[in-house]
Image (cartoon, rainbow, N blue to C red; front, side, top):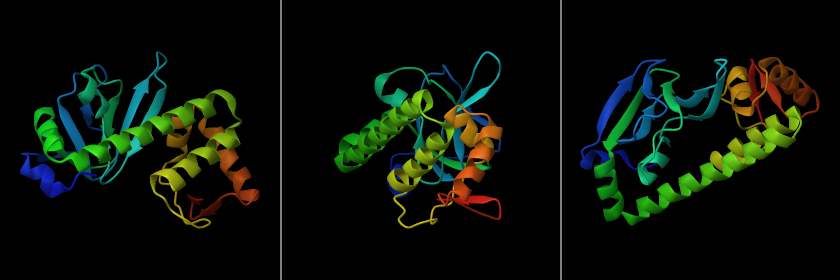
Length: 198
């Protein structure tokens, strides 16, 4: 999202995280901007029963956890590496200097945050009112069309596990497995070597 060279010129550092390592925890104060160089990071919460709810999963060249930096609030979720990951970290102060001196980057950050707000609104609406098959398909279409902008039938590989899809959409994993099979029968999805394509 922000060119690596630009981040490094403002004293950003590379940090490595092992799979399962916590990068920051819910209710911690936000001090840094994080951008993934390699790997994958999830943001999640747990309810009183210990059930996980995944707020989002972020991959190479995506940033995560930045909204609290701009409004001086604590993190609303945890960030955890779901694979060995390398992350570029820059302090809030240096990030703000970078944005003030590079307005085109500031606009990109704003667009990215707006996309995430749009996604959250869609997911909230889907979870509250739609059937599981509709939720799953709508989620896949959002990723394909709005996040990755991939065209063509069955060209987009879903990188999420069945469990992660369930945790994001508020479904049981058994429901997600059943729905994916149903959507394949209807011709909405393809499954090749256990990977789902939309």
